Image (cartoon, rainbow, N blue to C red; front, side):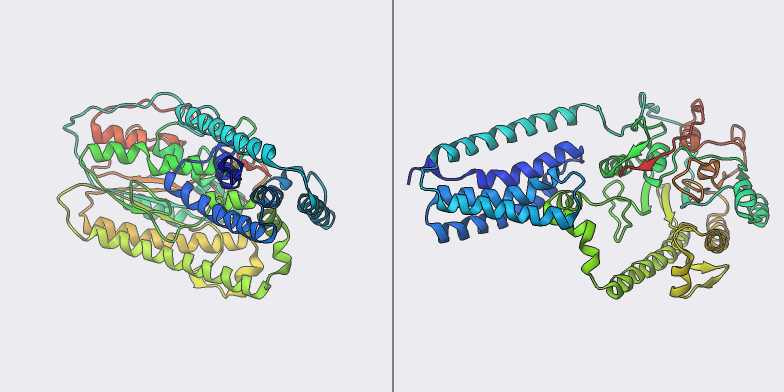
Length: 480
């Protein structure tokens, strides 16, 4: 058979579909990840083509039949509009079946259609590659730090103490705990002050979502975000890329620091497993764009075993709870071991963030945890009390093991998101306390803004003074 009449476009279609998803969703590029995802769609496409050829014994006809099936899977979700699935899926089935019958019974030669589709998908692939290359060279529409990066001097005579950066997720500031949630945290304030900490009673985060708040703090600048504050999965992935390759770790590495990652993010070639998901994976985003994936995501839960789902969720929550204790123990263990290099230890604890495991210092039964719901003031108070015990344990152990010569930073990334879809002041109120050997807290302010945290820390490590940025707050919501 003439090679020009072979349906190469069946191989090109899955390549185009996955590449176009990267391009349209502005996803972070990873060649290895792209190839692994392409293989998931390319293999079924080849199998479909071979089945159709076995049935019809003509490559152009088999190619067109396969194309009808693949196009339905890849492109029909784009035209669903507001139709419910009970109308849309039968309509899709009728349409696909009709096209398959027409193709099967066709007696005309399909060489021209085959050559056209081969050429079309080559052009589409080239166009998407060009747009991805342009996007990678441009910051347009991407979550990136605003303004120019500050370059620290190559040498410094300033001391290089170990730094323990301990982030407690969703831990609100003392004024917000008292005013908004009826929780008296004065005992924790007194404990920290008695242990030499500076406590900022009116500290604020800059974003109400973890990935963006942390990406900003670790890169010493604000981020470019959509003007309407609506962020999607690609924005999350871009923010997490900024966390993975952040300025703080780069600058401290240049100063001779060893970085130890006890966080929930992959950072500086130190991946963490397991890690919580703030957004669907790239693989999941592409899958949900297909007809099968979209239906599975939106209505598939109706056909699943709810008990099995609940058990799976409890297992995930159990792993989450155990992970908190493991990170605390590793942090304390590191402080007990001397090192020739100064160390920057980043510990991220998903507490007092939901789920609400603790009732003061007692573990809640699973049923009680469920009944509290995702956003419960009662549940939050219990988790704060638990977080306070972790703080006391870590602070006393680190200070004892390091003879008080290590920097300890305790901070939240955002406040408690009670009524999370309303822009309320308590979403930005955070715990913010710093212990510095020598207890010189000149320049630290009660209304500290999280974006300035590492501007102060790196400034002291390098013996320079960076001007504080104006405190700003950006209220984000998830795009529907």
